[in-house]
Length: 484
Image (cartoon, rainbow, N blue to C red; front, side, top):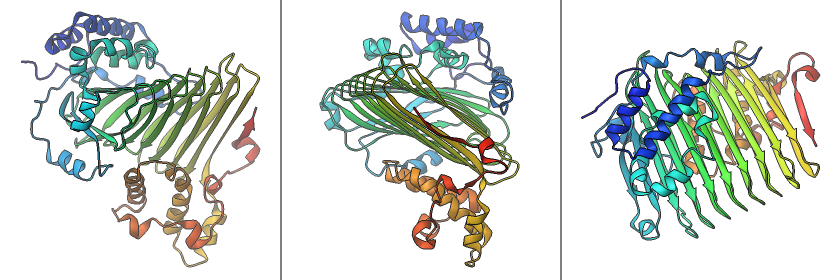
């Protein structure tokens, strides 16, 4: 029995993987077509003058990786995974699904939801038992396989992954929890999440990316998340990426909205050596609404590329994107956000805001928002800032007997807190606060001892994006808020 594929990606490896899984012919053909797209598509190199992360990914040696690593289903979970589940982001959950390397090894769903027709299973099982749904939605309209060279590679080698279907009118109160673990060095995991919320249904889905690998050998997590919100369907998708510094992460997340559908993405990026994220919202349905709340903390020599797109197609659509992050050490972050309003997308309201706070003179951040407006009845605004901590705010705290490191930490807390307050899952807010404090202090401390409300305790005003000090002429450095 196949336990692993030999290192390297090839057409023969695609066929061997599909044969091992016993897939139907249509899935094999989809994989092979995606492989052809991958081979015939040039790797993106970024633009002249950027920070070079996209070119770095293009130069990564994919052929050193094993594209498939099997794990026995229902095997005992590693101790680190068990501990993580006990301290997970949700106290009460309606479902649980865990992927270890290339295999989903554990699935739980409450009997009540099963009786209501909710389906939570691994994507391999869904291909066999719910083929009509998978064929209609898998990498067709939301994240097409041909979107990029990397989505094509994902479509050719996906394995494991999660499938969630919520029937019409079913409202799920407690969150679903999913975890993806990368457990083998020099391996590639291709996790795919397909979420379908039928008419007038609602669900909250919390997903975590983790790794257990130590050492210098790299591994890859290539993940795709596709969310479909049908008429009046509501989905909250929260994702915490806390991979090790030897993991490369390429992620594509997108949502497709029908009339009055609503999707909220909450994304927190803390780990990975290189993280290239593409997040979108395809607002095709009239009256649909999308929201993206993102936070990141980049240190050491981490490199992040974050691209967002609010794509307005229907009438009276609404979208908001708010991203904030801190950079320190030698980290590099590139943010490229876009609001696109199509012809006929009248009565659109869309907002985009991105802010980066640099704690090191060696860190570099590039935050570029953009607008493409092809309708005339539109309210759209965008803004971005990046810079060092305002020295006046530091001075204000330090003259009151607070050390500089603690003063920086307080200002960072105030910078993040307006975004954290918009995260709907309380445990995720707690986890993020603790992670931020740990990275700044170099040691784990409890939230109660360290995370304070800076505005109440020290009466600081404007410690959100106003904590950023722009050197030189602000007119040259800051992309001011613009409204159309």
